[in-house]
Amino acid sequence: MEKFSLESFQHKVDDVLVRHSSILDILTKLQESSARINRAVAKSATFCGCIELNITKQEVPQDISYSQLKDYMSSHVTGNLCDVCREKIEQELSINFFYITALANAFNTNIEDLLNNYYENQLKTLGKYGLL
Image (cartoon, rainbow, N blue to C red; front, side, top):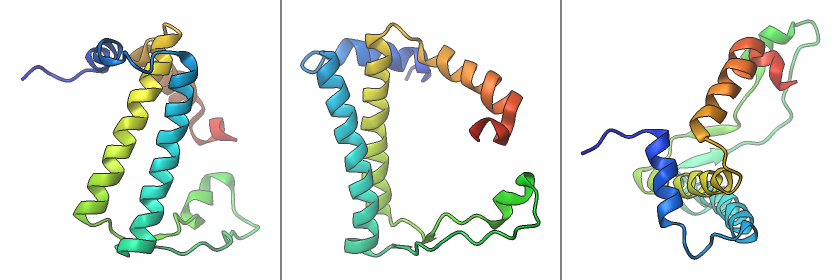
């Protein structure tokens, strides 16, 4: 089995994407895959019940610094995904990655370079302040 790399993934996406190679097809399939992720998460809570979504206002003390903010934030998710729901969400995320890669291919953008640049110039350099 060959070693996985983002480059080989990007080439494989380019090889197998035949039917939906139009930019409009890619954009609509990407949007559809995002909606399917949302639905899979919602179904995990409403149909299966392996997780609960307890959505409330984030309560943050006024006298904390921005660097302490993460300690007070909640994901609003309690519980753990069961094997069936985890498999479904992972499948939907994989499809989403496929269409993100197809979009990058449409614009001759190297995914590995893109992620490396984001890591170096945003995450590593600016850290949490880059997301303001």
